[in-house]
Image 1 (cartoon, chains in turn green, brown):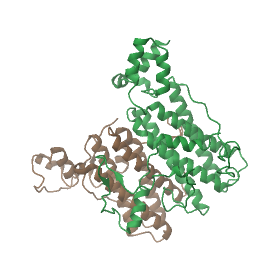
Image 2: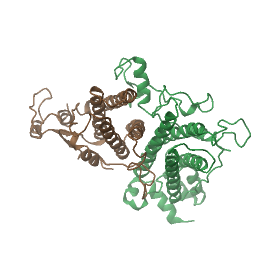
Image 3: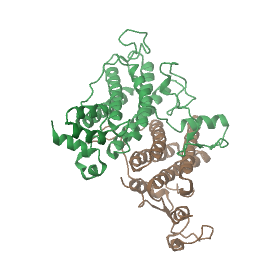
Image 4: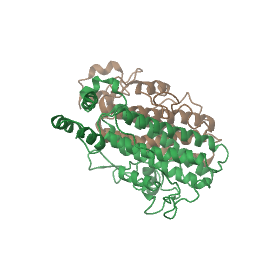
Amino acid sequence: MNILKLLADLVAVDPDSYERLSGRRGALTSLGQTGRRAVAAAVPLAFGAVLTKAYGRKSSTILDAFTLALTLEYLESDFYSRALSSSLAFPGTTKAVIEQIAKHEQDHVAFLQATLRASGVEVPAKPTFDFTGSKNGTRTPLFPTVFQDFGTFLKVAQLLEDTGVRAYKGQVDALITDNDLLDAALRIHAVEARHAAHIRGMRRALGANVRPWISTKDESITTAGVTDAVYAGEEAARQLLPDLVNYFPKATSLVVTGTREQATISLGEAFDEPMTAPTATSIAGLFLV
Amino acid sequence: MRRRSFFQVAGATVAASTLVLAGCKDTEVVQPTTTNVLNLGSNDAGVLNYAYLLEQLEAAFYQKVLDTPPADMPKEELALFTELRDHEVIHREYLKELLGANAIPTVEFDFTSLTLTTRAGVLAAARTFEDLGVAAYNGAGKLFTSKAFLVAAGKIASVEARHAAFIHDLAQAPAFTGVVETSGRYTGMATALTPLQVIEAAVKFFPFTVITSGLPTA
């Protein structure tokens, strides 16, 4: 039993202690279910009770958020690296941009792994993915030509990037207690959004009716009951205000000039909506073997 | 009206010297002078005002472009600029709603340093505004103490990043150069700027002094 490590974990969940221990940058300030069980199993009863009190604070923890993020980054990173090593033909200068995107995803994986490792958590291994969505031939593939047809590749890339943007956004409130990790997550989130917009631009250049932002004017690339969760709720044309009663805009206000129909579309486009962890996990699950 | 909100509302048009009138009622007339001050305030409201100022700036910029578009800008690009303008107006009005009585006033900007008569000039300016806006949101998230405001800003931030990427594409600028870190701990993450850095970078567009000293720094 490593008492020093346990004490370090303990002070890490005490914000006051954390403030004084600036050297712990990058370590998780509160452990999730897995870490909590591992710690509790290793300590005497009385000490364990103290730890349980310290750790047992909230259901959605920083560890949970980072574990989800790592799953999604594994997914994206593996997707691009396999595309780049496949026989897929990349038109024009697109390969260089895809290589840059692939590098960013690798960087995100490395950062998340290092953060988890620094917190004494066992880093989840990269799962095995099947990007055709056939679960290794056990069901009808969703995207049979994902690494043969550039248009299909871009569609899957768009679905993964837009999912990433929404999934990170769904986790930021769990990170609000740790400015350092919140900062990192927001900055990864912004890169995913740039990726998504560029992928959308590549599709537009190939003739697809798609905008850089998520719009109800975009041609649909999802299948009901399978991939439509990627955009479910994105079209929201009003925002619930912090009083949890009123909405922006008020029912009678269009905010922008033009027709009511166009204003509704613009209101949906102007905000990217968060996605819950279970939804993000189930979308990633489409590509798990 | 509380003292703080009096300063904020009065800020854009009232000289620093008039602050001695702090005890006055908000109905009293105070004379603007040439030394205009805009105080963003403090705490979460200060951070929201900071975002609100930047959204006012972006919305005003796109409106100016649409009012007198460059002759060499194609119709389909102007149509997308109209959508961009609408997003920024929506962001602006949403933040104003969140701020309520704490909102800074509507302000006007100085775009005389920009070349808005050519497509290239417009795209260069749009790139400046959008990249700056994204870096501002990236740096501002951690300054919030309210989860509701953090999530609200996050919903806007990724749309700004999409705008920025779109402008990079239109301008045929490198997709990620200068906006994604390439070394250090933040490799692969978006660049972030503090409020002070952002206001300094945009100072030529503000015909007033922006006070950021009340904003949280962490």
